[in-house]
Amino acid sequence: MATSNATPEDAPGEPDSARSEGVDATTTAIAAIIDPLIENEKVIAAGFAERARLLAELHRLGEQPAIIAGLRGDPVETGADDPDTHAHGPAWDDVELAERTLATEVAGALRLHSTTARMMIFNAAHLVEKLPGFHTALAQGRISWAHVLRMQDVTTGAPDDVLTALEAAVLPKAEKLTATQFGRVAARELERLHPVSLQERADVGATLRRVVLQPDVDGMAWLNAYLKADEAQAGYDRLTRIAKSLNDADTNDGADGAAPAGDVVLRTMDQRRADAFRDLLLDGECVGGLGRGIRGTVHVTVPVLTLMGKSFEPGMLEGYGPIDPETARRLAGTAPRWDRILTHPETGCMLSVGRDSYTPPADMKRYTEIRDQTCQGIGCNRKATNSEIDHTVPWNKGGPTATGNLVHLCKACHRLKHQSSFSTRQSPTGALTWTSPGGKTYTREPANPIGPPPRRAPAAPPSPPSPTREDPPPF
Ligand SMILES: [Zn+2]
Figure 1 (cartoon, helix red, strand yellow):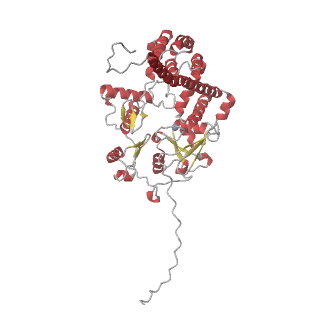
Figure 2 (cartoon, rainbow, N blue to C red):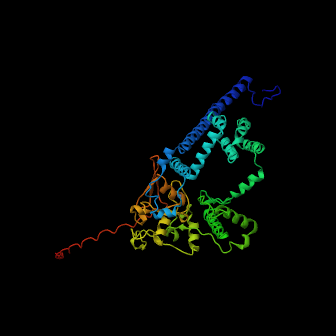
Figure 3 (cartoon, rainbow, N blue to C red):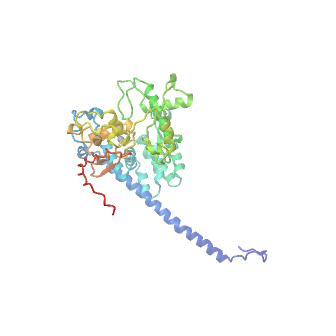
């Protein structure tokens, strides 16, 4: 408002009506964006609710006997006469088969890792069936997806009989608080309602200890320290090697849910890796000095011109992807062993032993390892060195042991291929096309499509001698 003691030098005061018009215009301009933003947020929330509904429906579909029968694989491939059968372990039960197959179907459709897809389906069923009030509130845009994620974090593992009371108590809070604030309130409320003591739950939590390696961008990775990718991977590899040496009698690798041998409760591979990590971090060495002399290793493919400093083409770190040329050269400089892979007939790498041998020779194995880098399952990133080699056309159906018919699949993807109605076909360069029970196809290109060597051109017939041409006369 203009004041009565204004001097002539002051800007002339605005009349009240002009100021009020300005305020109104500002309010109107901001509201013109904020109001649709609020509406858009409701649409996004409703989209998440619909996704959860569909995934929960898929989950229910996987419980129907007729659908499960349709998900089972070719009995010939799962038969005892297939050498692969010995490698990929006992058959999954119906629940496991349906969950894994449908999760992979979703993973292919939404471009996800199958573990992520499986978790998404599990969470969707949990939301729709056990937290119906939250599902409805999400569909109506009264709460956000972030609130639902907090509620799922808090309630996963909580007994079903407290969920109704918990939901009723905390849903009104979710409509008012930020997701983080709400998460704290919900955790406190669950603590009040939970029938099992925190001590007992902490004991169960301790059995889930593990070390997680997560690739990031720009040549970096998380080992839950943000490190250069090759260092993080070498650290994880070292922990794995130490974990393997911690208990020689331990036959339960925990990776595929296999039961421990006998009645002895053994640590899983995940637990041993976490214990090695803790001991090294807190004490500098593992119990009894285990781990001394164990070094982590990484596998890197470096283009020869990068190695010579004549190209900036990146190296490829196995299980990760491209790394900067300088790191690739540094790793190459300290490598104790090299495998040359040249796409040329003179390489000496045997590309097929046909039907002579089921097991590929070492150089063929290494060739496919470098070509694939990771498991070639849908959305799967497990390292090739921790995977199995599968005959795409099964051995017991006449498939040869040849690079064009061999591909890396981790234990889980390998079992999925053989035990479910997913099928695969392979191109000569190693690209693997999966066909899902839902009729979709997904092609997985190898990390290094080195392919078979070019065929030698047939020797050209000797050209007839050209008639001797007489020099023209010098005149
Ligand atoms: Zn896999």
